[in-house]
Length: 143
Image 1 (cartoon, rainbow, N blue to C red):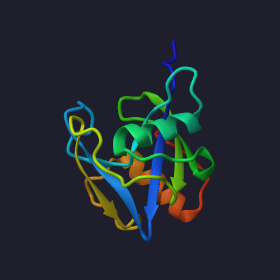
Image 2 (image 1 turned 90 degrees about the vertical axis):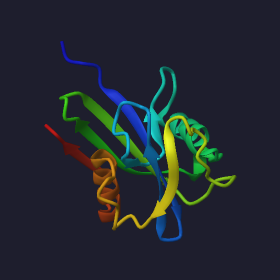
Image 3 (image 1 turned 90 degrees about the horizontal axis):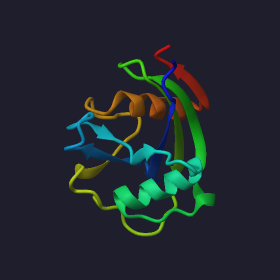
């Protein structure tokens, strides 16, 4: 039987020529690596609702759903062979100042130039950001 496809949302918060990344910790997945504010879509939740919720939970900001731009969708198979669909949203508009709202899962947040991501950025996120910068709206990886 084919495993369930996980639906992820990644939020590219834009401030000038920088984007926000968070350093993962104590999660059991990619700890010590940088990633976008992100998470899985909960049952009964739209991808937009999930993006708004994840931004609030992870970095303490409020995003008006109308401010989110869909910038890339990726059909991805992770190194374990599990399929995922990643929705990448971008926005430069939100309410509040981003903070590390989940210190038990994150060691801190930092702003980076999207074309010069640190080497320790989660590859799933880095690949989606690279496609966004090229204007690609869809990609398939790992198949």
